[in-house]
Amino acid sequence: MFNITGNLKVKGASQQVSEKFKKREFVITDNSSQYPQFISFQLTQDKCSLIDNFNEGSEIKVFFNLRGREWKSPQGEIKFFNSLEAWKVEGVSANAPSSNNNSPEPEITETFISSSNSEDDLPF
Image (cartoon, rainbow, N blue to C red; front, side, top):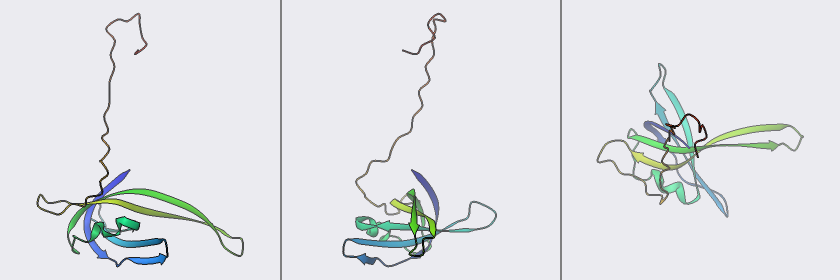
């Protein structure tokens, strides 16, 4: 799971690619480095509406997965493609809308085990 914050630059329309598959693309501007980066994301299926409540220029936080696939052309040439598949979009300001995807956000914690008895160095 990855996330990034930026300003919504382009919000595309939903596209019905096939009878069973639809997608929607949007672009955010990441200004965290010296040069702005324009990062394209993809929403699929029931997630296409996650960007509806945001206007171009809004500051948003995008949660996404990195996807990659291999494709073989009819001529036998193999190519590789990556996509950034968004699954949650939140507004950054306190009163900004938040998408509701009914997926709990994973919590990452660290546990440190210390042993007061030096004879037993196993943590269990």
